[in-house]
Each structure stands twice: as C-alpha cells, then as structure tokens.
Length: 404
Image 1 (cartoon, rainbow, N blue to C red):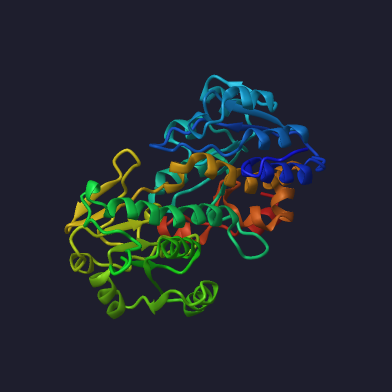
Image 2: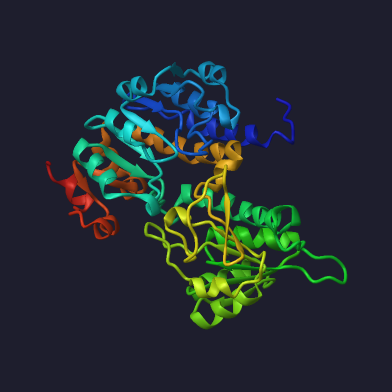
C-alpha cells in the first residue's frame, strides 16, 4: 500500500489497529459516545478507526448524532466503521453499559446514568463539586477519571497526551496576545537581529512545561522554567541541552521573574490534586502592561491568584493591566489532533475492559484502570477527593477483595 507521507493521522492509527485487532474479548460491551455539551468542547473520545477496532473485537458502539462534527468526523464515517447512530442522548445512555466522554457528565447526563454503568471521562478537579460526586456514588456508577489513569511506567498517559498539546499551544496563544491587534504590548516573541527576544517564564517543569519550553525555544524566546522539584528542573535542563534558565519557585525568584516576564505560562501541577497557587496578585501587579498570562492548569484550580476560568468564545480578560488567558480545555481548539491522541490511548484500555469477564476482574488485573477509578460500588476511592469534599472513602483494593 502506498502511503502519503503527509497523512500522519492514518499511519499512526493503522499501526494501532494492526496490533489490537487480534484481541479476543470475553464479552461484548455496549459502548456509548454522547455528543459533548460542555461549553466549547469540540473533542470526541474515539475516531472512526478506533470504533472499527472495537467493533472488530465484538463490541457494540453507539454514537450520538453529530458527536464528532466539530472534530471533522462525520456520522457517515462512524456508521461505516460499524457504529450505530443514536438520535437522542438519553437513548444512548440507556442502551450503553460503558459511557466514554471527554468532559464530566452534565446534570442531565447524570440523571440518565444507571447502577453498574461504567463511566470513563475527565473529572476536572478544579471544578468538581460535592453534589457531582455524591450523585455518581448514589447512582452506583463505576467512574474512571482520565486524570487518574496511571500506567506501569508511572506515567499518566491521557494527561500526558493532553499536556503535550496544551504546552505547545500555550506559547502559540501567548504569541497571538502579545500582538497589537490583541491589545498586547506589541512584542515579537523571538525578536530579530539587534532586537532581543521576549522572555517567557514557565511555572512547572512537568510535561506541559516541557512542551511549552520546547515551543518557546523554537520561536527564539528567552525561556525561564521554575519549579520546586530540582530533579524535574535538572531533567528538563538536560533534555533541552541547557538552553533554558531554571530556578526554584520560591517567593524571591517568583517576584523577580514576574517583573521581567513578557509571557507567563502557568503549568504547576500535582497529579490528581488541585494546582498549587504560586503567583500572588501582588506579583501580577508587578508585570509589564500588556504582558500575557496563560494559566494552563485552570481546570485544576489555576496556579495564578488572578486567574478565573474563561471559554474559547470569550478567552481573555485584563486584570492589573495584564492579559489573562484561562481556558480550561485548550486542546479542544485542535479537536481533531486531540481526538486522535485520546483515541490512541483509550482504545487499548477499552479492549482490556472487554477482555475481562466483568469490571471487578478487569480492575483487579489492570493497575492502570484500577488507579484511574475514583468511584466503585457506591464508594469514593480517592483519598485526595475525600479530603477535598469531606466524603468517606474506601481503598479500591479492599472493595474489590471484599464481597461488597
């Protein structure tokens, strides 16, 4: 078969399909993909190629009409892959044993969920409410969160994929808002001969911070990365051939950095917990007029005190004469790329759910999905969530081992 070297999407998914098509599932799962209704959420969890792999392994797929339209996947493509088009979200929820979403279920969707149903979606810790968790607990749903799924290598694969996209896009976004047409300071990120480049300060040396640093260096910017994890800073220095300047994120260095930064990328994150708030309003007040903050962890609460959630349709606000971009779902603006990224990670996990005789067996044998589960058998299973919302919790290993 002749391959188009530019058709990178298809090459990746074809390789995935060749590997996974051989899986022999022990049961046929009814899997539902509703259309996302959260503000400006354009992604969908599975591509038509992913659907084809799951159908070939004996699973039934239901997808709500126009669920993939914003990522430029048509209903016809999904139907050709073997999915059944559902014309009502309520109907889809009632037909499906397993719901795969991008955003957490809405209030209406929670009402349609049933006892024993499996939910795989993001949780968005920064916006999670007690009532949301209590509803799912009372419903008897088994809920698996993208933020908690952790591989044997210690990585969070879905989080990593989205963070790679977010880090790269954060710098593109900041570049746009530095321009005069966006009421920025009129600075070119990379500078030119005889004119120094802009300074980008990145808070956090994790995956988002790394990809933001790579992109900013590609533009020619001067890049500072700050974190309290010296091992992470050392790793990033080595990975980027010491082309960045690093510093610990203490009050002294943060205060100095805010004073000379043209762009601040907020990427400080502790996996599975709310983001730490490192930058105070007083520090923001010291920034140059027209400088830009992109808080990429706003969905986890934000790491800048002046950050407030915005949307793709109204993405920025100005506070202390600094432009703030605080959109929670940055990857949604490249919905097709993000959907392929989600699909490539999710399909193997969905096949593993089908390979097990039941959810209990799957969670017992699959440490990634077990770690990803935050509600099981009418119990919260994450200590971090229990501490946030004062809800009792049980260790999931104990729940699986018991006969509850």
